[in-house]
Image 1: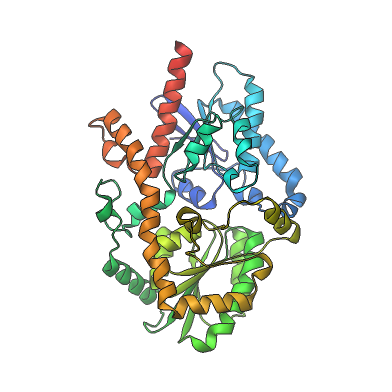
Image 2: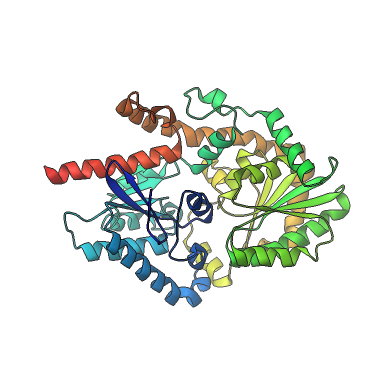
Amino acid sequence: MHILPAQMPLVDVCSQEFLCVPSVWMQRELMCKEGLQSLFPMEEIAIMGLWELLPHIYNVKRKIKDTLDAAILFRPHAVVTVDSKGFSFRLLQQLKCRYNQKVDSPLHVHYVAPSFWAWKGGESRLSKLHNFVDHMLCILPFEDEICRLHGLPATYVGHPLLDDAAGLNVAGTSLQHKNVDSELSPDMSMRQRSGEAFSLEHGLSSDATILTMLPGSRMQEVARMLPIFFRTVQHLSHTLNDLSLVIPVAPHRDVRTYVENVVRSVPFPVVLIPGGSLEKRYGAFNASKAALCTSGTAVMELMLAKLPCVVAYQAHFLTECFIHLRKKINFISLPNILLDSPIVPEILFRACTDKNLAAKLSEVIFNDEVRQLQVGSAERMLQVLYEPIKRQGNLFAEELGDSGLSSDVYSPSTIAALTVLYTDKHRRMVHRN
């Protein structure tokens, strides 16, 4: 692996060099373990909302220029941008202009399709992406067809959640096998052992009521949501036996400092765990009775862990108005979107008060019917995510034959990597011809 002192790992695979710009802190943590060095902390561009972005516009533009200069200097064969469409698409546009349609211009691949399908008139914007995105890697099973219908080549590579399922074995046996029913069957005894081990490690009573709080990974959302979560739990503290809280903390110095300062005034035990550790996060989930969660990928993780939760979200008033005017879907949580049903309770925007959250969280904790609805829906959600990637995995398995990779081609991360490799290979063959 060749490392450039930038926000990107550069991997020599089959004599080709690839540049990847990660924009999700969890992925960045994993990549750092493989040798990633960054031009800048990605938290500096992790901004959500319209009003919230304004103070950071100049800084983000400067970061785009720094990344562009590093990419031009390295001259990669492929550039893979990860999420953060506001940053990534501007980078790819400027990179395309610098190369000016030269034959040796790098392949542009974007991982995680933007959710244009969720907004009125949003799908029409996909056709414009073809000017600077050569291939889109989608993590939801309906997105690749939408992209292709609007002239943008795309492949559904599977949701990263499925890699978690395989890596932690929380969904039974490995996802690389083709017997889906056995793959996605839960191993309750394993989950129980994991929860007991977590409680023992952190000195929590076996009779304690443990709640997990997931206030987000960005400083702005953590500062907004964590105080609401604490006030919510305070409302319920008299009804819960030996209450303890667990908070997975994003690997950002400011976030950790803020959380550590806030928990000092909380009147019940709080366990802070590194949010970047899959094992510790799922150990906490398995030990918990329920969770409060800021909208995001964490909701999918809670579904995988079969931990009932309530989703909460607040935003600046102007951002909220924009969302209400433009959205065309009924839900913001991916489990609800995938199953087209209000499986996970959502308490959003002005309705997101500690009293409203406390009422819904109490229902999730004490109402067995409500709990079972979420727990029972987890397998359906995993089936929806996994079924389509079997076809892509089968194609790569045939292509690779007896290659050492062939046993792992049903992993979303492997399918994504192979899609980049084969897309670049095909493009080079076209250029040669």
